[in-house]
Length: 47
Image 1 (cartoon, helix red, strand yellow):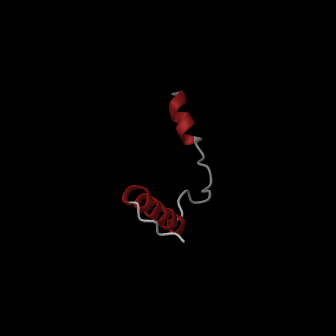
Image 2: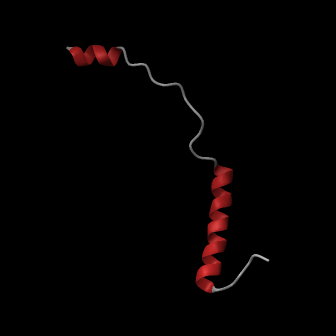
């Protein structure tokens, strides 16, 4: 009986900031791809 009363009194936390920013993710993916190219194909792309 105690568990059902715990479920009824459950109050969720309010939503917080997003965990993932798509623009930042795209930038990080592009940078990682450039680093991979430089490291494994020995073709520098940065000046």
